[in-house]
Image (cartoon, rainbow, N blue to C red; front, top):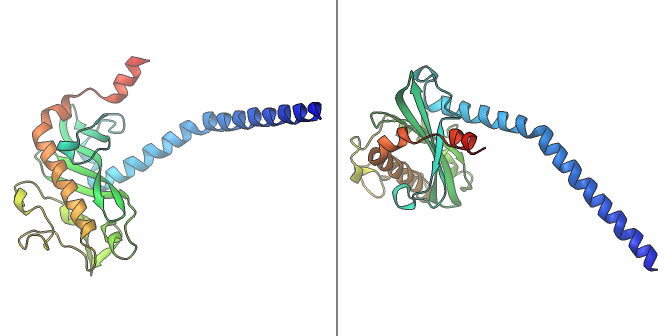
Length: 221
């Protein structure tokens, strides 16, 4: 009886070791491909909010990460990519999140030109209610021929002024609509974009002068 149990235990251990080896081998064999696909997806989304002719650096490696709950309005780590042309600063693309969504945090990518105007905003992921909160997506019109997420294009802290960065339900003079039956979702995104703009304006010098995390990681090795 003991020998049978011992044999079964050894077989289970061997299966576990083999399984772990297969998983590790698969990861090693595919990690570069996964990283390459993630880079392509990132660049594709960035290309929707910043014209590729505006910069000539590798924006996917020119980045750093920061945590500033008070400044950025989220407890999560935020990634800041920098777009440059011939070493001149052009724009920042900030991957952040709006924590106040109806279904939880809404991950967004915000492009801000060096002059403080928004070049574009895109929602990367969310858990909002289908048919209501999903109007924050770039391929859905909340009213005929109108994409809500594009209402941020060209906006800044001067247009509108900070006190008007809200949905119209909260401020009749605000330029951002809410959706019928869904105010929490657009309100969260507007607040996140506003916080990010305020952070950019206050920390612009730091944003473009901080060494890239890619460089830091290479030096650490």
